[in-house]
Image 1 (spheres, rainbow, N blue to C red):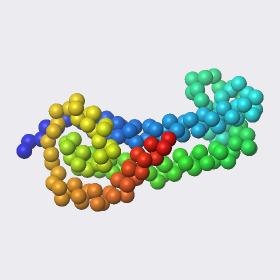
Image 2 (image 1 turned 135 degrees about the horizontal axis):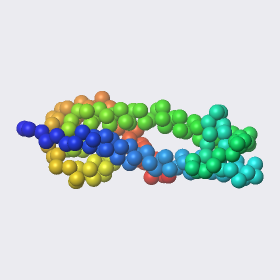
Image 3 (image 1 turned 180 degrees about the vertical axis):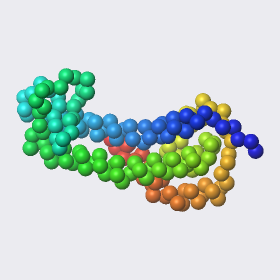
Image 4 (image 1 turned 45 degrees about the vertical axis):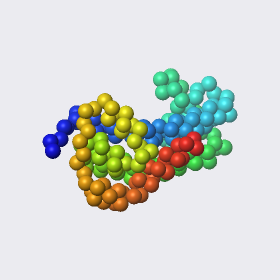
Length: 172
């Protein structure tokens, strides 16, 4: 069977859509936590500038705002809150995102068909795939059931992390 190859950008767009589907809710939640720390810091310091430095990094609510010459520093009373925030972000970036997105890359590299992607990825991820599929005429199937099962078994941790992220996003 001849394959209908789609625009090479489609895979990157699909990868971005899956990433956003999984991580946009948690990104918004983390952004809200960081903004709250920034606002609390500005309130404690009685500063009109919604920004501060901590460990050599600048944290700001509005990146377009004019930065003061002398930046606020994070007050010691908010450091535990900031450390907890940074630890959450690090855990996500070190222990979840690489596994999940590595599996997504593996799926996208294993086939050029949406039907195979739907067969390989958990059902909770099908929304962005179906949305993209609706705008693309590619509807062929390449992988056998054995191939699908082997890839799923090899990547069970990544699949479980995806499902866990979906559940955690519901709690945000």
